[in-house]
Image 1 (spheres, rainbow, N blue to C red):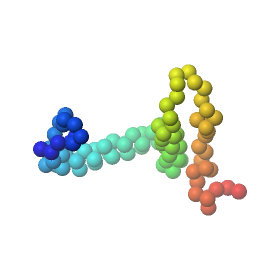
Image 2: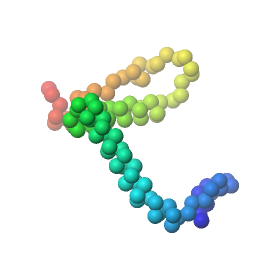
Image 3: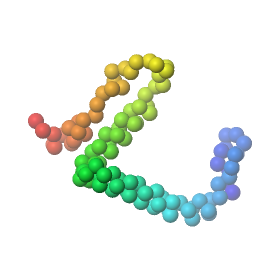
Image 4: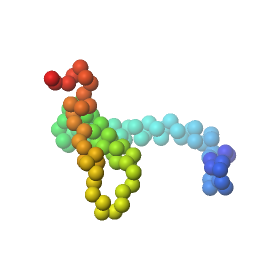
Length: 99
């Protein structure tokens, strides 16, 4: 058993052999679940995989932007940067962008 929290009193200990035995099956199960969700989403909204990936990248970028933003006071107006859009052409590589 290895204590996880080395700064203060450990709240639990990690059983390394048990963790290593479960790490790969849990990783595969999580990835398979994510892929199944993505395939179901593609079927539901009737998008090709490439189109769906573009929307998922936009969603991920939007969530990351909001997570990095400093906290605001309740009821404060959104700054203009918070409402900026991420467009499909903006995500496209430079050689694929339309003129």
